[in-house]
Length: 188
Image 1: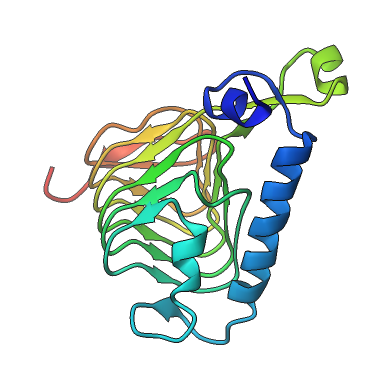
Image 2: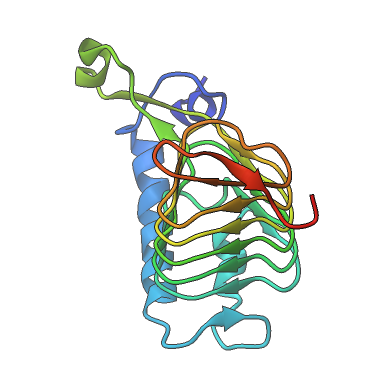
């Protein structure tokens, strides 16, 4: 298996592999162009076409306010009407799926990347990724962190500053560090 194939499969891989390094460089060059934009990137706006080169897939109605950062981009699949506010980071060494109608506030961090607990493996430069799935009509508050392997159910709300380390059931409001269920979202 190539290091990319290992990475996508969730196995330990060498992040310093030449193929992966070149893929990240290409993404950073594209992000440099996107992040220099002085306007929101949404359909009909000059520069929106660059998002087609960045993301693996997205539906109509995508709205992104630069700056935005990610590792590869192609491992990110977005539904319809997804909104990214300023300064979001998605470390997409594994698949990131974000459902339609999801709102992502400023400074949200979505991390699929992880490192072995054994220092000897880290010393070898090995790392891994676990996919993240975010349902439809989710609202993720500012400066929240979504950790590797987490699934967030549709219509849930992640309070500002939450650190989500475990799955969130559909229709729940969670907050805190680590995030805990506060109560059902309105309508549940």
